[in-house]
Length: 410
Image (cartoon, rainbow, N blue to C red):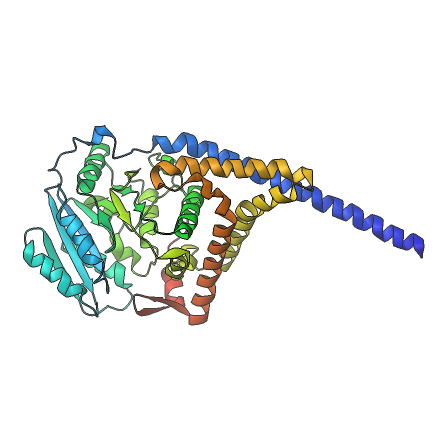
């Protein structure tokens, strides 16, 4: 009897020993991969053009014609500031089209009042009904694009603010590089510490999904960047990929059209420019979570397996390392790989700080931010499945129809 007990203890000790070895191995694998990403970011990010560089000071105020398309639904508190910042642009070859997409508040009247003051600069389109088989935003943008005749189209949102030279500098860069698609990375307006913690973390994680410094490389087609705040496309490039007509039911339309541009072999470019384009995404981290409920699951193509895998990646790469450092105070084998991972994360934050303005010391908030992102993902999955679809801008879109139109992830 005693021999059996000792035998069981020995077997469990062997199993537990292997579990601990695997745990240490996992910690080292994560550490090595974060070092690789940190080095890549430190070397690559400075290669991304900065539109604030003196070389762009002389970008011409005239050039190819440009239409800025601003769809809005119930944005009466924000749309005026957005449109006024566009009207004040020092780029002369500019037409602004504001699309009032079925608003029930004063959005339309605010647009009309500004259009009366600036008849040569601002045009307003009013949409009263949404056709079947369309999302409201993609329909509004496609309608405005069809009516435009300019050489370039800029799609943006009604809560975005533009510095007076933002379009001049962006157009100068787009023309000089022959870009079919340009994203000027927006600067986040951060009003609370939890916004900085969560959004800074999301920016760091985004470097795993797409490397901005590889966007200009025609061979790196998986590195596609699309941002709803600033999606500038040449007219030929827009229609070459089918425009938003081909993305009628796509919730993450900004990223999807960027992927289509890359797959089509067209020229995509990304540029930084702190405070040229800015927005306050949401009030607090919970506000960010609420906003992303509609699109987190759609970003994974409504595939549960990919959403679960993403949560597992976040736990392994972002939650565990800080706990490994703490555990390493007692279990020395974990202290070094955990410390290396946190150091690499710090370097990634530091590389991003110049462009985001977020302190690298927010690295200590990585587990908190990762747990919030996991919660946001699961909230999006559960809400979408429970509702049987997505509610966006006051309209319900059935999940079956969204899945039927979802674009490939890669």
